[in-house]
Image (tube, rainbow, N blue to C red; front, top):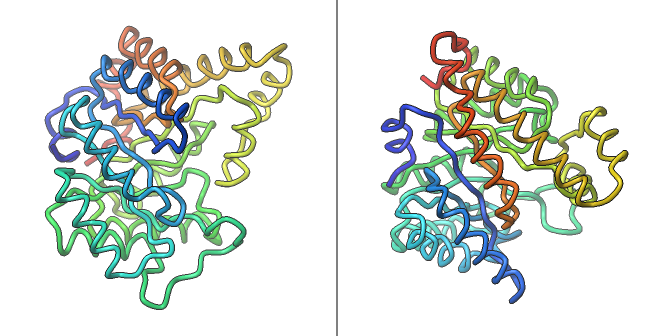
Length: 305
């Protein structure tokens, strides 16, 4: 099922989960446990990441297809331009389509390990917008794109970043999912800027619960996201890793509730193949239903269309 059809049919916010292909037997067991538990939450859709340089490309396709047996036909495979020729990108898209997957998240991708900047192959693509166009022009798949509440690391400023985002949407991206962030004001500012630039597709916030301090610091350093000082101070004050985990779940639950009350169309959870935090947060949100506070007073900038 296409994500645009899911969004159109839902009167309430959507919840979606992101997984990654494991590389070890322990990772396989962890993913199996996470998928079994999260399937009970009946997510609206899910996604599976594309390894650096396409290193897990076959696993991305097979895992997405396998998870559709558990979650239903609502999977989305990631695809990046890194190290790929145009011909190989077409091969990858055909593999995704032929596996019965109807949704694709088109990304440029990060530079390979050890390289500071992205270098386009002579026979490849330089921008995510080009990959969006390749898929949208030649295949009957729904295409999603990424966006950055704190501005892409390589963009000179926020205005230029939103202009690039407009090109991605004009090329055919029908929904945008944000990079992780921890200050909701950054998301609200992005949505307002996007609407001011004529971008009217749904913008779904991506949330990674801050349950592991060392991992969080590593990930935010890589993607350019920042940890707000109050959150960082509270993490430093925690007595042990379990306390950090509890803090991260509570902070993310509050963050999601504020976003949904402000009119966000849903939440995309970066699960890191760990069901616990996502299950707790989604359960709390469905019990509290903060989006009901937004129905009568949803800010214009938050509307998806």
